[in-house]
Amino acid sequence: MSETNFLNTSINMFGLFGKSDPKEKLEKKYRKLLEESHRLSTTNRAQSDRVAAEAEEVLKEIEKLDSNG
Image (cartoon, rainbow, N blue to C red):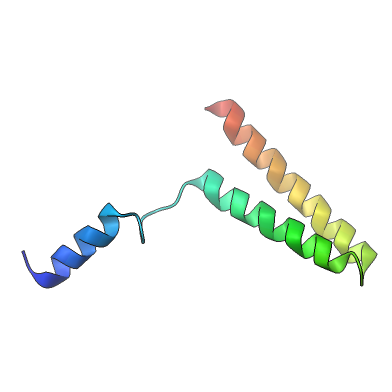
C-alpha cells in the first residue's frame, strides 16, 4: 500500500474527512444561530429575532429527522 493510500485510509477510518451526519450538521447550524442571536440581542433586537426564528426552523428540521428514525 502506498503512503498516500495508507494516509487516506487512516483519515477515513477515523472519520476526519468523511461525510458527516445530516443531523450533526443541523445541530451545529442551530448552535451557531443561537450564539449569533444571543450576540445580536444587545445591539440589534430585530436582527436577533430573525436569527432566532431561523434557529427555530432548524430545530424543527432536527426534530423531524428524530421522528423519522
